[in-house]
Amino acid sequence: MEHAEMPNLKGKESHLPATTAGRVGGVILAGGHSRRMGCDKAELRLESETFLQRICRVLSGHFQPLVVVCRPDQAVGFRELLTGPSFLPPPIVITDQHPERGPLEGLATALEFLAGQAIPLAGVTTCDAPLIQPTLLYWLAEQLETSHDAVMPSDDQHLYGLTAVYRTEAGTTLRQLLEQGERRIIDLPRQIAVRIVTCDACRAADPQLLSFLNANTPEEYRAVCQRAAAES
Image (cartoon, rainbow, N blue to C red; front, side):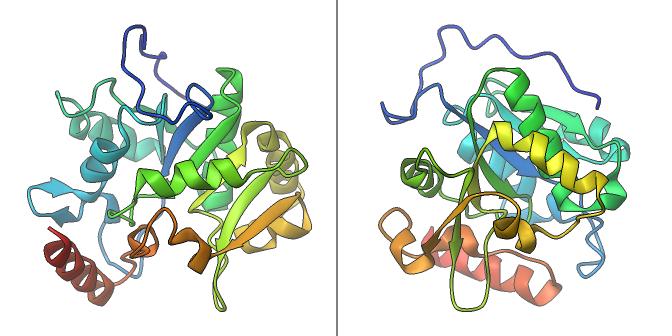
């Protein structure tokens, strides 16, 4: 795993609630191939920013450190995208060594990195969810009980394992599952201790459930842009 050095966070004001300050790092998974979209979703534009820039700007300063996980061929371009005063401290771009293993590989890589920095919790989102609300990830962190490895929202159709909070120590188990051939995020509740909360309960922190709106297809991209315009 390639990564940059940790930025110096000394003196940076924390916007985290007192119960989570210093305990929650941020993770943005950005290593997908975007086959249904036909182009890199991280570089889709929403007004004057790319999706990745917007998500990093929204989360930067709230989650320390903020980690972007991508394929090796994306790293240089992403580091260039994320340079500037909007990102202080700048996100840390790290790379998967096995990008063909899908998002579970990216998640394990990020959890292992944060565990190595003594950060116990990780708030996770993806580069195709540009309306992510930091308050939702804070709230999920508050729902994590000592007996659980992760908190995931769910509705009647989907388990949102990539809009979730994990204990970083779970990265060791995820790595073992990957080596055993596991690839599916949806199967994690059978492998680790997961607390599932309803999406309706998540309205306490994200009333419009904006954090769950993602863009996997051109049609979904247009819908996200329309929703963002309506919310602005």
